[in-house]
Structure formats: C-alpha cells, structure tokens
Length: 142
Image (cartoon, rainbow, N blue to C red):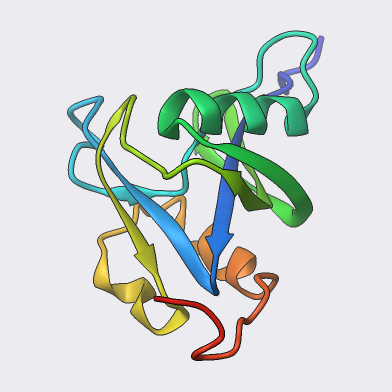
C-alpha cells in the first residue's frame, strides 16, 4: 500500500498582453479573499491541462486564450493538490472578474510586488515571468 496519493492538478494561466501579466484578486473562499493569484482552476477528468486552462480562463474571465508554454515545476496547494502553470496569450475578449475574483490587474514586471500574492502563487509567478515575452515600451498602448 502506498502512502502517496496522486495529487489533483490545478492549472493556472500566466496570461500576458503587451508585456504585462494578469493578476486576479480572490473573493472566495474566505481564507483566500483579498489575496492575488494567477487565474485558473482544477483539471476535470478526461481534460488535458491545456484544455482545462482554456476552459477556466473562459469561465473565470470571459476570454479566449492560447496556452503557450508549460512553466517547469509544480507547487503544492494544500492536501491533495498541486499547481501547474502555463504561459498563455490573450486571443480575444477583455478579462472581467466573473467567478471567484472581484478585481483584475495587468501588472508590468516591475509592479509584481504591488499586490499581495497567495504564498503558493509567488514562486510560480516568478518562474512564469521569466518566460513572458518582453514587448518594447511604446510598441502598443498601455
């Protein structure tokens, strides 16, 4: 008998646009409310991580996004759950806080410390930021 049970995967998107990363402030559950995270959610049976990420970003933010690259590593989220992060590109729509969030912010790399990240998201954010494309200042409206 093994004492190690396969952890359930939670996918999160390091969604970027014009060199900025999207942060989402939790509104639920109460123990996470007011803290910031990368948007995403649990992988459903039969779903690939990429499919789950596209679905979760559609449900939580009302956008269509394209997974780009898996960020190496997994981060524990509590008993039975691990976080996997993908960089993702915004394809269409304007992100809105539809589920489990009450505020969204686009953060430039030098603004990442402006929000109170959930502790388990901080190392994932640091890894993800290393993989985000750097748009030249002035190349698009900010």
